[in-house]
Length: 313
Length: 313
Image 1 (tube, rainbow over the protein chains, first blue to last red):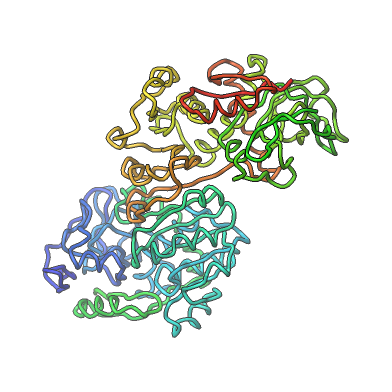
Image 2 (cartoon, one colour):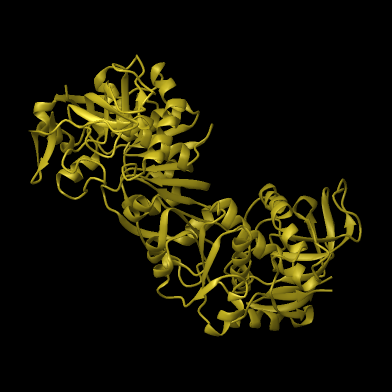
């Protein structure tokens, strides 16, 4: 099979041996695979693949058809449309995924959209609901509202009955992000728009002290992106005074059982909304596998709304 | 009535008008009232009493007998032994407390012990269970294990089936703290004793980065004391990598309904253990009300194990 492949800090398309599904696993003919920030880090050699994933094939998510079932795999049948968050190796013509990590693809989604769903919606759902316990009527602030996770978070926040304010640096994107249901503001001075019950931090440490200032008593800050810097000063008295909670996470290093749990939560809480068209995946651009290097350049250039997706077969 | 009273940064004993219980409130003849770090701040003028509390009478906890019932109060009868966390005014001969904030005093507790229970056990229970969700078999690190909250937290941690390591600066206190059920270590190098699922931070910002280093994946840090400094650098990538959660809180500013909820949790989860003698309140020293200033000096001097309590009537 062919796959996007990291070679000396570049992305090339190379031949690899076809992977074989083991017990409980499924061989997926990948149709579409979204790009994510972690792929950029992996291309640069800064984020090695976790154990059990192909070391040189990036790709944290995929959507495709079941090509073959490993021993004992019984959740899906050949030809079923499936998608998943994976530890790596998604940007290939074929990928092996444990059946417990797979989710069905709702009929309403075409391949580019399905390839862009798993990582950003699972990340946004985990951050907003599992970590921050966002609830009906609360006020949510999303930093970095124009990105993949940002656009997913805005929509999930609105869908659960929260009001949403989003910061977006690129003013050319404000109207599109507002159309997803957020009050969109420039990146500075956001604390004046608070107080917020939940802050989703996709930008990084420079927002840390203003996030605490903007927080309502009992508020929660969830950090899942630090592109603008990872280290900042934290005032613990402010944390205590606000009775605040700061958490962070990444999906990629989680073990099978935890990835499987997030897939079950997605099936219960997010796929019904995708199926009914109540939330959607903005796909900014899609590229055939042959142009994987261009897709990475497009992602790295920024200024996009939503996902960049590779169409792998 | 007489009460410990803040005058120009000093504690004196002064006469005040007797408080009157309003609807749903209870007049308590206070027998014992523990001292806490917040009282020291209030004495120094740095921590004004919250609205609704006497502005110049410190005291965040009390135990005593029901002297009079306000209109509609029906949870207790005259003469019942009760105790509570209050917003202030506990270090007096009389105090008015809403009946929903009051807890019964288990028979096993004498007055000095009862006066030292509410603040530290409510704080420790809230931090370990409501915030950190400490569970059976987990590993708990308590920073500042010789203080009031520290000794309560060590015992509650052991009682719930966690293993407990405690840092204690004063080596003369190590054996006494160990007798409460913790492995006691000096304050430095604690990360080598990890990983910990929960860290209870009673010391402050200097421990922040080592706490993250010492944390197990999915671990929780709860900050409820910052005597050694409030501001420190936080590495958000470390938070994400550990899938960590940092929270903080104080009890004093919480509204009635939240203080009442903590009292119900205490009744369900902590009073049975106090009644059976499975956890206890180490009382370091008790002072009559007339010697309130001495009690404050004793508290401020540090190096104690457990509570300093005023015997108010």
